[in-house]
Length: 552
Image 1: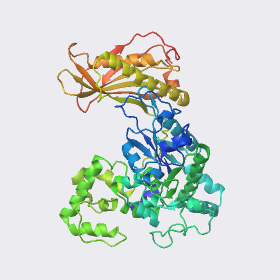
Image 2: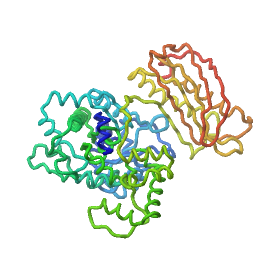
Image 3: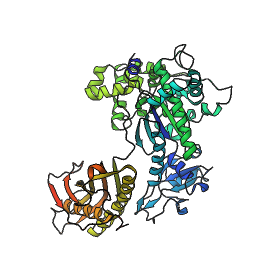
């Protein structure tokens, strides 16, 4: 009933696109692609403890990296047991023919613009048919395709729409989808068995297309009279299929997709069948899909709160009635179950929903309990937001292996971080006609005999149409650092282990028409998890004007 009510209230058609093994795919289609295509391959993060000269995306020295953590793995390497976060040398030990490629480096740190630019190119394609496009990460995008679904329903015959959707999409309540819903996040990263099956699209020209068993009442799934909401979702699946094909055709990347009435369910559907596949979550599938879904698969339930939920739910079943836990586990099994209640087990959405609401309130508080219940029920009213451009730019560098102990060293690295931010800001300004108005410096610092603390200061920027140069940004950051330690004795030792610099609070160029007449940095202290300061300050930095290209 709850699922049906949700679909009646919210008739949007939401698509979710997840680019398959994206960092590796970008490399395979990039300047060094000929060296890695057709092989097990992985992308390795830059290791800050090793001094590496700058290497752009075309530099062949990025190949054969043996130091660093793996951040992306293609499916050929996953099949050999290689996983994300594995050490590069360990990957070589278990898969000797793997091609390892380090991310590009610039300004003494990793430089990820190669992947971000590729992600933006995908978004540009999706935006052509989506009324709203919400970039969730470099390789994930939620899109509102309600308008396009309605257009297809108006322009094409229902028989054509249904036939196209059937050969390109799984249903969320078919047999393979139900099994895929029960695996953990780690199983997904490894590439579980249900993800390795061929897509319905691969046999679209065959009359022997497999029809998977659907766990729903008779007359459900494909072979039924579909409601208007269901017709919209099925038409939306055609849109997603065509967009995925367009991304592959124009850019060379494959992606997986999901279609549902909200972002929560479309993302879940997207993760059921990968790579290069898609899934529709119809109203009738919601309860059966979520019943066996492990809670860590839900956004917001994979971290500390998710751990708390798992502990409390298992505690509830074990302490109140051990037999009830056994019954819940058996209800989700397709094979023989034992009668022994395990000491540790996965917690599913179905298990959460069987706990009385007042008990959930006592465990987590009323607001969090309500949030948890709605998530496990598939209820999410938040619309897709137009968010294809960045909200902030961050440049971070860790010095735990070589603490910065002088103004010279700090200024040197603030110059490098400022240069990286300038490059990104300049590209963003050209592409989106927006500029940042806030610069924030954060440092982990030891002063004198005090323990390591974290503090940050935010400075207002007036950049304008052409907007500043690297040295001006660096000088403002350097002034902020001096304010951070301004109240200390000049003879005190300081050591900096981490530095972060970010630009945020973007405005359109039309709203920031003040140009370069002034650069004012109004600095305030932001709360710190380790320490805080109540002081505020106003810095008027009288710097000479600097043309856009003077520091390039």
